[in-house]
Length: 189
Image 1 (spheres, rainbow, N blue to C red):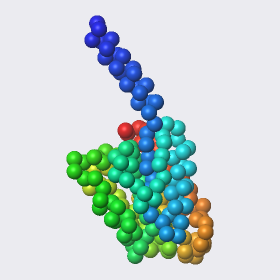
Image 2: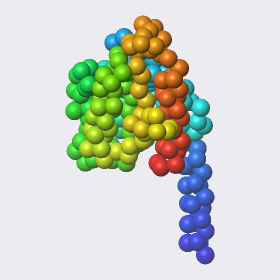
Image 3: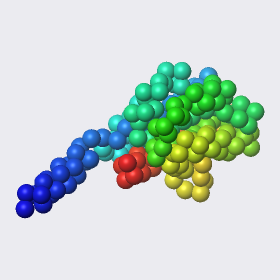
Image 4: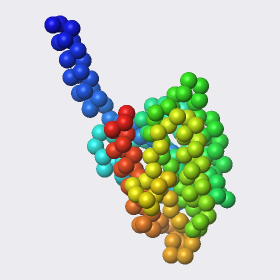
């Protein structure tokens, strides 16, 4: 009988413990013109709309291995350079801890900002996601078919040519990505 009571207590307190400890989401990004930073801030709003999660927002240059290891989800953002992620992002991800597979089963997501339409934003997103898959991460895309690889924004072409503000069509995708990552992280981890 004591054995059964012990199991029930562990189950009960384990369930409570899992509900009390908030899930940790890391949003890390590279930005020169602050467009990618602005998208990161929209993703923050989406994450904050979900209860039971906490987050860290950091530039890639400030992000430590400890931040990656402590996070339940990692969302990486980059500007698009010649249909690729920024060199700083490539260097950052190439130095992620690999031995022992410490990032396995963490949630991963990506966001990018590009100057023009068809300037390589999807290729850059997929490159980020490919790297996350190598680390055994569970990939989360955007909220619907218009953002299958995460969130992206166009900042310097046609209707979307603005030096200071990202169009709401794109900020909404950032918000939805943050919200979706937070919701899924609560379910998975």
